[in-house]
Length: 626
Image 1: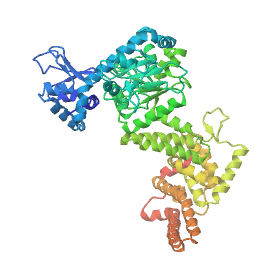
Image 2: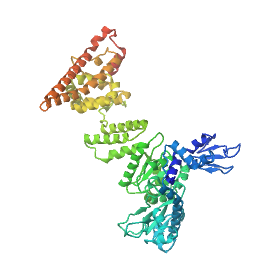
Image 3: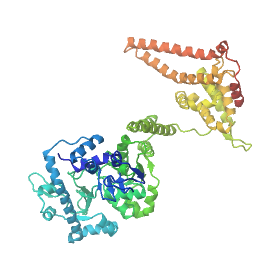
Image 4: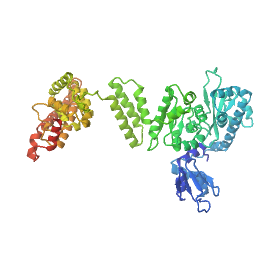
């Protein structure tokens, strides 16, 4: 049975080594590691350590060392395949079926590593030779330190279709093709994939060379891609690989952060400046597997993509991939670079301190989502704003975790409401006696506005009653603010009164609103219909309940009237259905009107049920307003 290195690496990643060992050995946490008395030899002082981040155990006493599979074979006595099967069952993975071709590939895999190592040695040698002058000149223009060039293994691929083939003649042609170093095409001889390029080795989490990236040097080759990576091979899967992970993971334990940039040249620029904890995806958007790899290193990786539109799109694609994976304590953070700059440009222009300042204050995923969607399209019309709300909710629905989804929904909708329904400018003027509390604006314009409110609301007894009821019970205004906003939209004649109510509620805690609320109540309170929540002697709690019902009825009424009009309009096309719908709606309207009459007469009926006439709370509330 053949098991690929990628499959085995995923198996190791899905199980927690300390949890497996802790089932049979007593362990305790010490900093980032776990310690225990070694199960492989007798000792009284613990010298056995377990490192979940690196995925291995080690005993400083007897030298026992290995990963989770080695633990199962050495400590449990299982065969390799039995250990793999047991761990796969625990991790929820399916063991690949036997495959003769895969078995042959597994036999060649060690040889593929040999091929890649030999290729890297040859590329490095070419960089120092005569053919590598242009590559050395380019590295000099980037200003990289010699130690950085050495550490990252820069090399050069000669401008030749067969130079690598001749250099690695000891390996079969098929092996070079399988390693991604040569390209086979029909009816033509194979040729070297990398030609005339500055070369970089791509290594796995263990530091083995598994692929290459090449940057073009001649600007005249306008039809060639600037960067060229190895194809997917038995060693290399670009969706499961993060460039520089084997160096960044240890460095991140010192800085307690992991930084994600767009490309490997950005990684090297950061390392050259002293920021060693940077990784990069392989020329594509971050994948789900890469995000999980990042979360094994740190709970909140920082995405630091280019400041241009393409960089911001890459950040949003990463956020879209991460939303379904979010879980408590795990997220992404985003740094927005100045427009037109990548991390290398910023460091070269302003120094490392400028980038460190940005990395110290990254934005959250939620902030980035809101800013991106708010700025994505014009928001001049109600339809535009409704589109913004829909886009935000579509992002929210991608989140699988219910608590995180609910919190994202609440926060984004709060931001949307504040944006779509901004607070009106205050309608109150400062007091002339020096008191900082707001006071009623008694200018001629303000008094004329109150008269207009009186005229508009008095034509509608229910609207007048609701406005007067909220003025009498100002602590209920915030509770019904959304309904009030809808009321102002449906009936512009009431907009001024609604504005005054909401503004008055905002300043109640500072005093000064009682006067305007009293005048508003007197101005719009309907004559002839004594609603329960307008009576001084009605119990406060019951008055507020009736007021809430009245607000609901006021909002329901326009919808009922529109539905009746629509039923009437459909008579020509569907008389039978329209008549039935009209009768149903007329019954609803009659019930609506009956409820209003009951509410208006409730005060008179209450004494018969033993409720005391005056209510001290209501009387005190009224005194405050007067």
